[in-house]
Image (cartoon, rainbow, N blue to C red; front, side):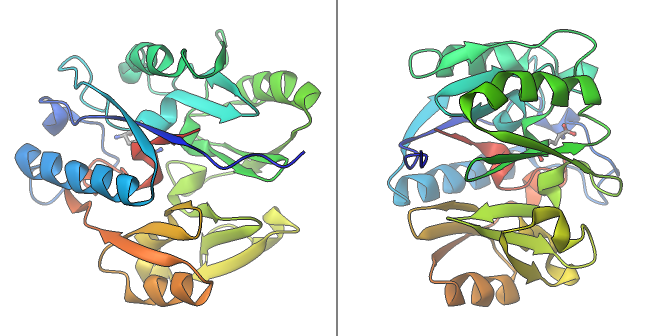
Length: 257
Ligand code: CIR
């Protein structure tokens, strides 16, 4: 059964404590929170331009990384698996996300020792690829399989060793399409997908939010823009440089359902 297109995008405003968000490498310039807030607002506007109805959660000073809502749930087939986040410092963020999703989806939970970040999860048709990463462990993948396999989804584990999340280097682009940063994962990991290689120097371009023939892509990635347009998608470029200082990509900032 084909999955109907998403109608909603859940987002959460940038926390006033965003300057303390987790980052793999300290940024050369400190995070400018006001600028991050403006970039997030432009992102939300782009989602609206994709004709998604935005469910906007308020910011929470307790959670510097709270705007990265994608990590808090894996949604497929009308069910949201609420994550037990891989980074201990982020645990608790998922509660507001669960509340935001509850009116629309059936919720399921996971328990220790399982960990999973939604940024490691990528759905392509009836397959859900899940990165085995610093944040997502085998028990988390097993929980996703236990929940989604009876619902007709095949859960496929992919080792992610050189990036924070699976979707740090790739993202779905409509139907069977898939953007993948060159020199990261082998395209064969995604057998059956139409893989479009994004040049390594445009790594941020490999993470895009696509919906109904249009895609929000990272600004400053001309090659990506050309590749995505040539694939038949209208592109909307958004600057998320400030959010990237905390390792945030475009898909991290929303959950589509
Ligand atoms: C973290 O380290 O968890 C956040 N600073 C960044 C999370 C980015 N999320 C994503 O790629 N899905």
